[in-house]
Length: 195
Image 1: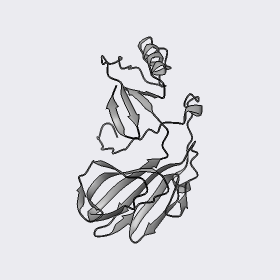
Image 2: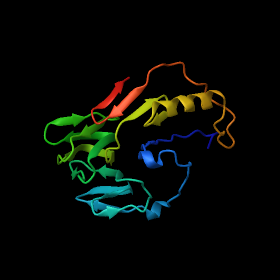
Image 3: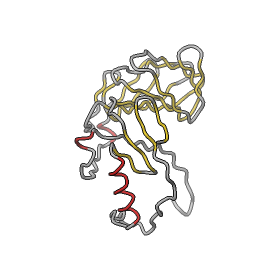
Image 4: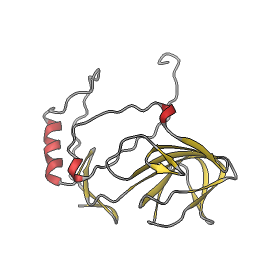
């Protein structure tokens, strides 16, 4: 494959954890594709990877109410988003969508919706979307790739990274240097702001 070249598309999502488990040891769980529930709703093909939606329940283990689903919407079909998770958003992977009756979403854009609001999507052309959401977790701080409920924990992680105390990924030989930046960002119910 390397000699012939190939294209790989992916979407990597990271969810914060509740404070009582945010320092859990890293773990990996594999779920075969066939274990992830899917169904067709009015022509839209929906697959639920995490959480519950559209009458489907994923077997993937979570620590709090979380939603991650994907859907392929043929034009001019539509889909009403599940509302059981308070914080919800949709990312348009490909195609063209109209939200409700008047707002068009640009490809590779994420829109976050008001809690409790019913949201209907209409495919203006064949489209693929990711639907994400979770319950509010409270304030988090972010610096580069580090996220925590405590700034001092991020400072420790920065020191550990700089001094190479993080274990290397098996078969990896490169390591990225710690960036030269000062800005922390606070993530809360009102959005993201520099601190």
